[in-house]
Image (tube, rainbow, N blue to C red; front, side, top):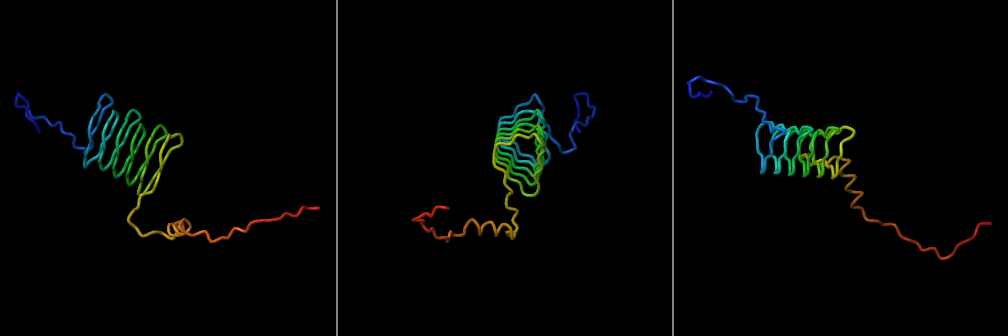
Length: 152
């Protein structure tokens, strides 16, 4: 609660726990929040939040680390999150690392690598099999062919 000059109490605090970067706002520098952030403007810097939404008009240039992220706007930089949702209007130039869920809508433009980050669990049988294939030595011998027979 705040008191105005006239002594009247006003309650103007945002109690939803969500912060909003409006369409006409530009932020230079890193953004950190334990709450949720909705971005409709431009952020030039790294973002560290628990949950965020980038709207169609939102744009981020920098690294994003979040628990959950929904992207409908533009991102230029690395994205790391537990859950990543990419809308059809999203344009992403950078690598995406996710732990649990990745969902993309048809039409999204992604220029970068997409990789499931290590969840801290032991390697699954499939992961171990893939590693064995990659690390296996090629034990085949090459036998040179010295003469050819023609078919009759």
